[in-house]
Image: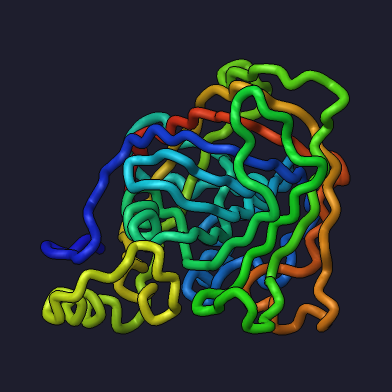
Length: 295
């Protein structure tokens, strides 16, 4: 729950964000092991919604401009879930909707605000990209490798990434603009109440009492507790926007040589996205104010 004082700035919804993103399609018949972070593992209870399948996705997003500054993101949306209905609540609560089940970001400020604004279960991680974001008038790289590491790791420490992928954008066909309003896929999400970790409020008070400002991009695990805020209500929201240049890409998962046991603590290692994905340059995304209710 939101505290009266917090060391991280509060930035309420709605948000407008600019980004380059990569969309990896999934079609799951059952939910994989390790779907949720241990903090949100209560979401596996079918009383909070039953998985109904449909088109899911892994999304990698490189935000270049947001209300809280730039950051990177890895998101897992397994598909649709039923949404429990209150006996008396606001109208227009969806009967089923997408659910962001697991998500990592490279910044503390968006972790705190994403959890409070939309019940998005953000956790910290370190990202590596083999090429910069594609600028207008510049061809995308022939290949892009994306690696995501556990919080607290540093480059060169020998720790293997818990997620790694190689993307090859289609450079032989022209990119096209896309208005998400006309895409025949619903982007409505519904998120259960989000737990807060033990020691959250103590960590907040400690940061405030110490008076030392922590770098928003310090992704050490100990600095996550203070920004892992919880909520006590459901919420749903839609995501819209426009993409200046959209194209396809070839997708290849890069599996860990260690067998993935350690990596599976952070991200399911059995997911198999389609070999064809989406590559979107200079997207402008709109995340609306949530519809909120309690059961």
